[in-house]
Length: 246
Ligand code: BV8
Image (tube, rainbow, N blue to C red):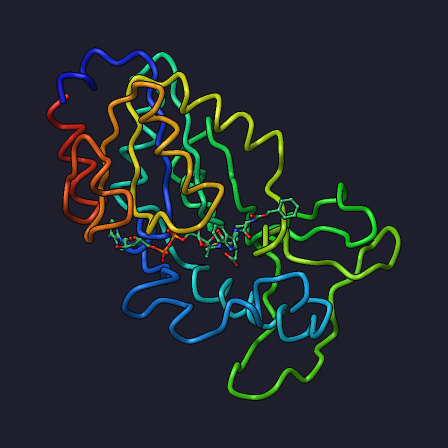
C-alpha cells in the first residue's frame, strides 16, 4: 500500500460487485441477472429491435429493483479518494448511478446509465428519467406492449441509454479511460468479473504501463493472477479499511 500513500494519479475500474452491498443485483455469480435472463434476449440491439416492449419491461423492472438503493461505504470511500489524490477518476461499468449519488464527480460511465433514455432517431437527445414514475412490471406475464416511451421532440421510440452487447462504447469515454489507466500510479479493480471487453482490457493496460494494480473482489477473476495486490472481501468493507490506513 506504500504505492498508494505516495500516488499522485489513481484510477478505479468498478463493476456490479461495487453495488452488491447496496442491494443491486450483479450479472454473474449466485443470484446474478444472467442466471435468470439471457443477455441476448434483453441487452442487445437485436433484442430491442425484435421486442422493444420486453426490453423496456426488463429495464423498468431493474429500475424498480434499484430505486431505493443507496451508496454503500465502498462508494463513499471512492468519492473521498477524489480529493485525496491530485489525479483521480472512476471508470465504472455500472449503470446504477450510485457513484454519483455518493458524491463522485470525476467519473466515466463506460456502459451508460439505467436512469437515462435516448431518442432512437436523434441519439444525442438524452432524457434523464430519474424520479419519473416507473411503469409497474410483472415479468411473469408476457410483454403486453405497454405504452412504449417516445421522444417528445420527434415522436421516435426511446431506448435505454445503455451500451448493449455488440454496441461500441462511447469512443471519447473509452479513449479517456485508456489514457487514465496508462498514466495512473495505482489502479483499483473493484467488483468486476473482468470478462466484458473492452472495459476488461483496462487493468492489463494499466499493468503494462507500470501501474500498481490492486484487485478488490470476493472471488477470483481472470485478472487476479496479474494483479499486484489482491484484497479478497466485500468492497464495502475493504475500501473503507484502505481509506482508514491512508
Ligand atoms: C463491443 C449493459 C464492439 C447491459 C453490458 C469475445 C471476446 C472478447 C469480447 C467479446 C467476445 N464476444 C463478444 C465480445 C464483445 C462483448 C464482450 O466482451 N462479451 C463478453 C461477455 C465475452 N463486448 C461488447 O459487446 C461491448 N461492445 O465490444 O463492441 C464494437 C465496436 C465497434 C462497432 C460495433 C461493435 C459492449 C460491452 C457492454 C455490454 N453491456 N451491460 C445492462 O447493464 O443492462 S455488460 C454487463 O457486464 C454490465 O454492464 C457489467 O458492467 C458488465 C461486467 O459485469 P460486472 O460489472 O463485472 O458484473 P458481474 O456480475 O459480471 O461480476 C460481479 C463481480 O463482483 C464478480 O467478480 C463478483 O465476484 C464480484 N462481487 C460480488 N459482490 C461483491 C463483489 N466484489 C466486491 N464486493 C462485493 N460485495
